Length: 374
Length: 78
Image 1 (tube, helix red, strand yellow):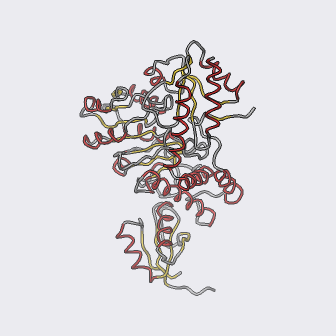
Image 2 (spheres, each protein chain N blue to C red):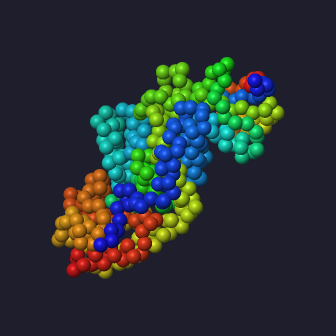
Image 3 (cartoon, one colour):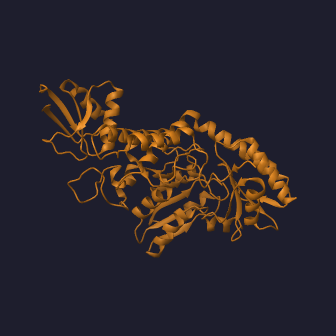
């Protein structure tokens, strides 16, 4: 039985061949750390890190490679901004379909005196009514990892700019297969993992930070940077302010290769391919009784199904055992999103697509769903 | 022993600034290379860029354009 991987929201698989080759080349032939030597191998690592930052600037329409922070992942990047900025007495507004990568640091800060409000689902205009003088930050989840619902980040960013409030976007489910424009959306920061839509390895991510916000953030992690070594305080300049300790250099090489792959294919072409597959999937299940696709305003290759009268976890297990289709069931680290979708606590079965999926994969999944509901 | 020549040496706060400058100078055809910081100079990141003194005008132009961030500029015999 052929295995069909449809859990790309968790991590994309397979990766481009060039990603594996770049990681292998680094480990076998280079091996040195950037910023820790002036010899050729160290410089090559530093140059590759710069290429990665510059590619991110091109992909997300951002001007400052030195303000592209290499992080361990989206969660780390989100925590860097949320915890680096908010202090007791501050107010933060979050969009409702959040992942725990945002909600857990926010709830932790709430206990320390940060006030929290959630926007209503699919109503960014309600932001006006929630803003107060203490509001310092708005955090938006661009694409829901549960339902694939998209938030209107352009509209939210416009309001944040008018009100002079920092705007953080979590692009965990959209970066790499959905066109994102940092400037057009008036973002202050954009956090993403390297291993999902960007198709790089795990353990690396990117945080793009506007200089005005970067100045105000306290670094969460302090340590050696290979720079300002005469000082025992963290340097204030970028990106070193947020890059203490040795970087994930195999990840840097892998992610740089995957961004090159995305640039070669074109983000618009990748997006079009995923949308075509998503529409085919949704059309395929539309006529099947006994199953519902939850959410609305879709468009990032995530489809969550609720099987009526069946245990969703058992359905997910059957999809693997009987059809070789890999999906994710449960609550997807997003309890609030499931409450909004009325699928809490039973969860859903999530199918998520990548550039490497095909129409045949989608047809096989639809056919399996049909049999399970039959 | 290799004869010494007058050189312009640039220092940087960070590796990112150093390789950004190297990348820009290569793009513009400005001759030079990254070297370890000479012992007479103290620099943040341990990397310096070294080129012929004739490049001073091009470097100043790049600074004015905001394309490179340089910590210090030195004229040395290297």
